[in-house]
Image (cartoon, rainbow, N blue to C red; front, side):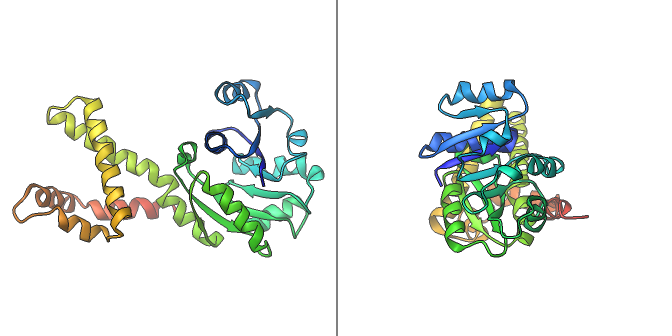
Length: 261
């Protein structure tokens, strides 16, 4: 699966293209609605083939990635389905809440190799947390090949479609929540006398260090917190202030808010 066609070069499609281009090892074709968008891709990665026509773009692809907004997915599939080789080509969709049964219905092929995929914008830097949900009947060999392809963009979790929404709240939307926390730390740093860029660097490194400790030790976050919390110390004072402000409850509520109908 070394020939990939990405239809759509917006935030998500563009991030995936850039991530794969940086890793190398695959032939990339990307489409967009405007030449201006494609020009930006070419300027960054001259080796990436850019095409305005979706039908001609998918012709030689092993994998077709549908990276358009959910409300555009049906019209794009209607445009390209006559040119898809269902015996050979695999279709990945990153259109949120458009599930594989619906995609197969649009495609007019109940046995199409369709997989529902949810990466995040970290894909551009090969640090995505991507959720991969194969349609019923998709072979393990196809799923494994797609997993290997997506691992070029970061970490991958194979799951059921019903799990993707929760995973996306933690990972895709979670990126914004983590950035909001870093921003808040920056503001606190500035109030304490640091310059904004210095506060940003320190906050980001604190975040990286926390992740490194958890990954390197496998510890539960609560146990890791205990290691840096001394009786009567500074850390416990700050943690107690977070508790008084309802920090845990606010985080849980923010995650669940995205799942409410």
